[in-house]
Image (cartoon, rainbow, N blue to C red; front, top):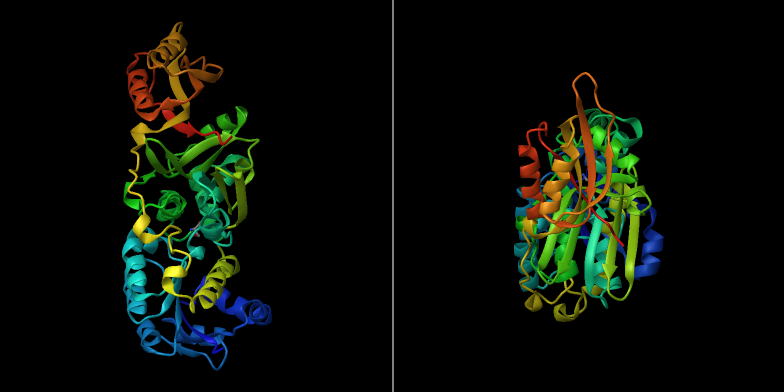
Length: 436
Ligand code: HSE
């Protein structure tokens, strides 16, 4: 069979990793696929650098449009990033009848519906395993491995930068800013780490997971997103005293009320597997009706782990390209004409347990007044610690863990607590999840 001819757009860390892994494992891949994969063209603005990374026979250009214009190219790997030029070039590649493999979660979360529809109409495939959790094949797990199941929920640590920062804050007692600087100097965080620390990168990935887990349109616009930049080292230490770790989780759940899609910091029991995912590692936990809970752990970023996912998609596309489009695995796991229009729940509707840190005057009756507000809202206390009082300022802090409560009830209880004359300043509130 004729080799599959590939055009690679973007020779950064993942682009170079993809080229190197394909060369290094060429024979193994051919033994598995029964067909040769050939990177025929590479496009990168830095032509000299790209030239130094690839073999002589590979054509190097600076304009990605030249790759799209080449009729011999069957498949384009988009590793440019962002949703400006990358969006344009992906649509052009599809219009030219080329299959596309991308690691671009932002592009798919925001413009995925348009991209998948264009690909469907043209009969080409979009591979996006590399867009979520890098080297962990979670798209394949949800779309194929667990295809017999009804998925109940998925929860994961799907941003390595923030997990690294939170691990450093806990282990070293550092502030958020200190840990961020460390992440940047070690190359984990981007120079502009906004998408990571604000939870947007995790929300892109969580939206893709949610769509393929539940057979819905990409829900990014309705996702609840809260990052980690407001987290204080003392809350991480208090959580530790109570037997919990704080992680930035992407959570998507199906319930009779609708689907939850949310990213926010969470206390989770230190005994849970997820709590022990440290540093820049990723992990995704899936609860499905037949399998129960399963968990997938690995590197969520980096040149070769991400290249592994990119190449797996290329191999799949090479296998499926000769199959009638209607008989292929649906791009978004469910048949396009059978997507559900299940509503995405707003945050006020969800239920969670909560961690509260409340600064109070060290006076008689303060604890009773706080617990009375919670009791009136029907919110039950699970555990509590009180810090030894500052005897000069006559102040102390109450740390309370609650049982499950609805977010809207907790919000109004916090507003009432903050209005108590003996409560000093804002209440710190972090959600707590149990994955049993
Ligand atoms: N910025 C991402 C992370 C890289 O920190 O996980 C992979 O998407």
